[in-house]
Amino acid sequence: MGKPVPRIREAVSPRPGPRVHRVRDAAATAAAKSPHTPAPLHVTTCAKVNLSLEIIRRREDGYHEIETIFQSIDLADAIEIELTSDARIEIECTDASIPTDERNLCHRAIVAMRPVAGPSLGARMRIEKRIPSGAGLGGGSGNAAGILLAVCRGLRLDVAPEKLARIGATLGSDVPFFLHGGTMLGRGRGELLTPMEPLKQGVFVVVKPEVSIPTPWAYAQPTFGLTSHRPRLNLRAANSVLARFPRSALPFRNALEAAVVPAFPAVARLLEELLSEQPCFASMTGSGSAVYAIFTHEDRAVEVARRFAQRGLFASVAKPTRQAIEIR
Ligand code: C5P
Image (cartoon, rainbow, N blue to C red; front, top):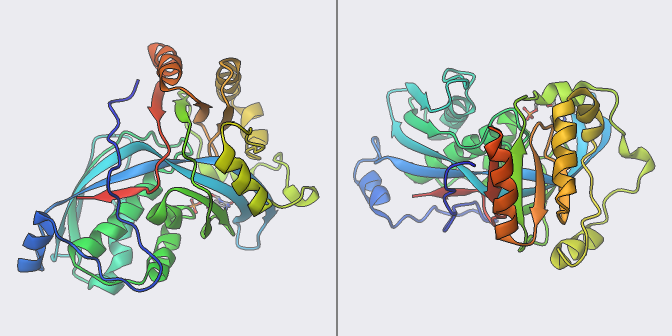
């Protein structure tokens, strides 16, 4: 099983309307005294699962219009970041398979903040990865959202939430979601967000097979069912189901399973195995390869996760969170 999961206690997320980031902690006091070299910030960034994912149509720009329900969970990465004014970006990462150069989303997040924070914005950061990549868990997107918020907090920038979301969307379709977290409907390519009834109950078991799946591959498959023949999501009905969960079953599916499951037998097998444990719900998340199941009792979730972990697979128990980013 994964390492003990840090619980998200107090998270930072943009609220509607312009807002000055109020900072009361020691790091912020030091930052205020020395605006060019703020004290290091500790950023915790959650993973997400998609409770539902429907593909509406292929767009001219190569993206797909989707309708998805995001849920942040407390499986999280930890980033220590020191903001600098020497325009250098240095990244250390505990996962050797993740590039630490300009391809890293945290690197791109710093560059994307320069028009707001100044051209000399730089950073030194250390990313402790607990969220597996290539899994559909949004680990990289969450890291990027964490960096955007950390720059605002560290430099005491008053950036309108809509502007931050626009910057986030240039980094990835689900980065705007991570600026908020919780339970959210995502439309457009995933960046047009509507808050939903928060999922209060349920314990997630997230399992990832050995294989990783690049998102563009899954969306490029012609085999997934476009939703044109299905009614679009009824927000009120979906909220009512979420509010009553687990007393009422989740009537959702992930349309990308139709592309991924036939091509990756390992994903198909894990989904079947999870379903045989009789959870309240089970699905692939995003474009895979991770799958998850929701149980009502934590003991049961821990027992199921342990069995997968004993086979050498990534397996983690996680709870739903109301926000996706915490900064200390
Ligand atoms: O936005 P993001 O960088 O996460 O997307 C990665 C790739 O996934 C896109 O380049 C596109 O191929 C595919 N995608 C899509 N429709 C979406 C989201 C992602 O086709 N709504």
